[in-house]
Length: 296
Ligand SMILES: NC(=O)c1ccc[n+]([C@@H]2O[C@H](COP(=O)([O-])OP(=O)(O)OC[C@H]3O[C@@H](n4cnc5c(N)ncnc54)[C@H](OP(=O)(O)O)[C@@H]3O)[C@@H](O)[C@H]2O)c1
Image (tube, rainbow, N blue to C red; front, top):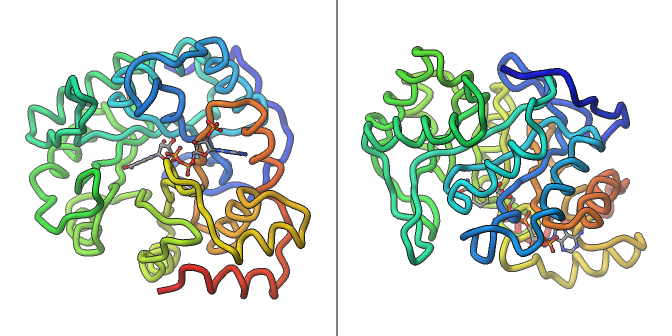
């Protein structure tokens, strides 16, 4: 059960809000993956710093946090619980299943019904909740999307939803065909795929989902482990006296109203910088130049 002990500030975050199923979330959210140790394995070097980032996120008014029990594993979920439990009513925590971790830090797929049931139980346990707000079924692999059937795995999550363990469903790292297949089984509230200024393969999908009121949540909005680099991005950023990260986030918010941001950071200073920077005003000329960077 969520509590009400922690208050969130009323500061308006850039982008306003979006309705995810029965919840309203800030379009400027936070991705917790960077809080685990190197290559998302083990604990962070600065545990107190990680807890401070999570508290700052809620303090800034962020109501959408993205995580997974595979981060660490367990590490980011346990940090979220330690920093924020009992959770504010307004906080929406999205998690994902479909892969686990091995001792070498690889992400072996685990999508048999028994694997998914275990991962859902593990997320409930490490986050300390009775129901998960949102579970994304992560398909593909570390190299990206892979075509193939989604039905057996997604039907298992739909069953867990009927059992009351999951409020909302989503899909991640998926092809358009897999999105359609999932939607034929149960309603989804979001698709979480890799997308940013330089990786625009999902442009059409973003627009189609927007028309259907489904959120698109880009992972690696800042380029992930390889920061976004582009001469055009640097030129626009310096013209606006802003950082390239601010421009990249502001562009995503402008790109489509169904885009929800979950930029990751392990730094309170970067979190504040990103929350402010995403509100940067971009002119039609800025948008046109930025649009040219990665348009297929
Ligand atoms: N569904 C999936 O398969 C999948 C895959 C990957 C990620 N995700 C989710 O997506 C979220 C976002 O992806 P991500 O965190 O990997 O990548 P990201 O948001 O594109 O970039 C994070 C990187 O940018 C750096 N950074 C952030 N703000 C900065 C700033 N203001 N100045 C300089 N550097 C800055 C961070 O370093 P510092 O820590 O130093 O700030 C970190 O190295 C994850 O946290 C996770 O929740 C999902």
